[in-house]
Length: 221
Picture 1: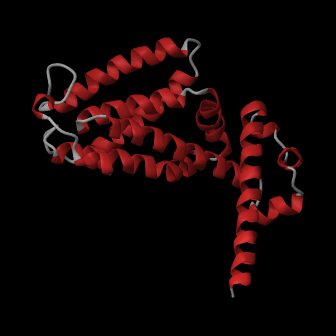
Picture 2: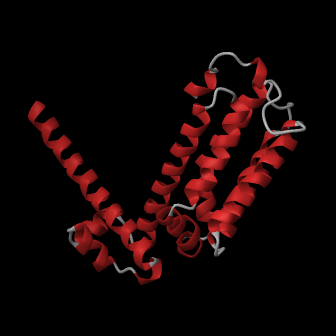
């Protein structure tokens, strides 16, 4: 039994390694050459696998691009989560997370996959499906902020959609500007004003920030 388990584990490890090699190779090629120009043969050559191995894991080029895009979204989600948890106050965490998402979206490889190639390669419906986890993450952060008294209680579904949709659209616009750093700077200024208005404050920050003296439970969320 132990030997069979070792065999299965080895097979699973090989499978994961092959899939990881293919996704890594595909991502590099999609970034450098663009989705439409990349061929399956090029992906297989870069990954060092056969076409048979490719088709064992993926149906076609669109399928592996979806995996690349999903991996990018997971990376962005992790970046936002770290920014949120680094702040003592939940509303400051929301602000930091939104800023981190915009800034990370402009990293060249992320920008190429997420903002340039994905709309044509996947379409908006598939993109929204994959982004659902990131959007839900924002909703959870808003829930924590409401429960902590950072912002007044309000319907969170429309607020989440407005914030997340606005950030995604803004990232697309910034990605297509010639001076992305200047556009990002202007965007972050407006984001501060927007979040200040949502919090019902006259200036950026949380309504009870001065009352917070110890880390809150949101860091473990």
